[in-house]
Length: 192
Image 1: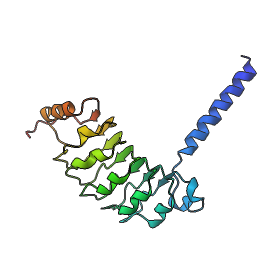
Image 2: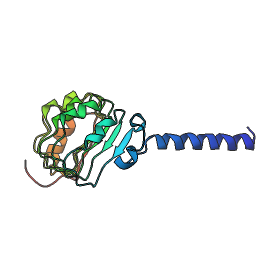
Image 3: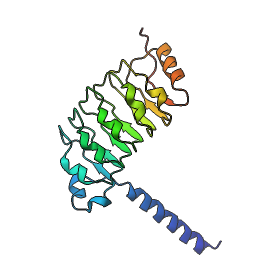
Image 4: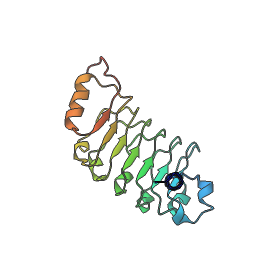
C-alpha cells in the first residue's frame, strides 16, 4: 500500500467515525424543533426544571435516546409508549419516588438511568423490559430489589453504588445475578 493510499484510507476511516459520532448527537429541544421530526434520534432536555415531559417530545417518533436528567420529574405520561424505538432513557437526578411503570411499555429500551432519585424498590415486573442491558439505580434509597432482576436475560450491568450494603448482602445479590456486572461501593460495616 502506497503512502498516498494509506493517507486516503485514514481520511476515509476518520470521516466514517466522525459521521458515526454525529449520528448520535443529542439535540436540544430548540434545535430539534428546526429539523424534520423523523431526523431527530437523540434529544437532551436536562437542567430545565421540568415537572412534566414537554408534549413536543412525542413528535420525534424515531427517538433512540432521550436525556431528561436533572429536572423535577415525578412521573412519566403513558403516551411515552409512542416512542417505540427508544433505546436509551436517562431520568437520573429527578424526583421519582415511585418507579415509573410506563417504562415497561418501551420494548426497545436497552439503557435506563434512574440514578439519584428517591426510589425505594425495583418492581418485580422490571423483567418485562426484555431488551434492558444496563440499569443505573445509583444513589437511591433502595431496600427492595424485587424478584424481577434475575429474569432480565439481557441485563449486563446494574449500578447499585451509593447504596449501603454489607459484604454478605452484596454477595447475595451477586449470586442471584450471575453474569451481570454489578457496581457496588465498598461494603459497609452495617447489619441488614
